[in-house]
Image 1 (tube, helix red, strand yellow):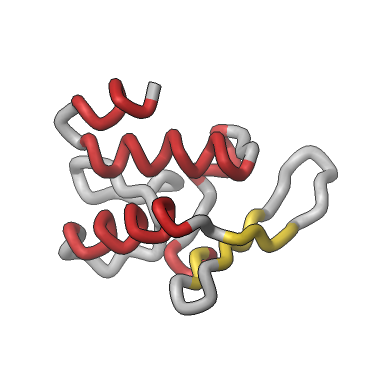
Image 2 (cartoon, rainbow, N blue to C red):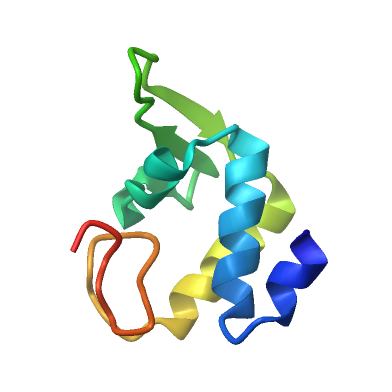
Length: 94
């Protein structure tokens, strides 16, 4: 699945989204709700707001995932607060 995600037009973003959802056990709604400031890249931590009465928790970010997040963010030229942005430049909640 990760290989297929890399092959698309937005391969870096899609690969990272699938990897993050798998590693942290995120629902789609939890993944699209992530914001840039939820990813503390200096300390390799991800803040996850769980839905459906789950507890909000902080998860460690593995090295390959951290590198992928940094790479994805360097490709973006916007200042939008969402971690995932559509090709039109809108955040997940827009």
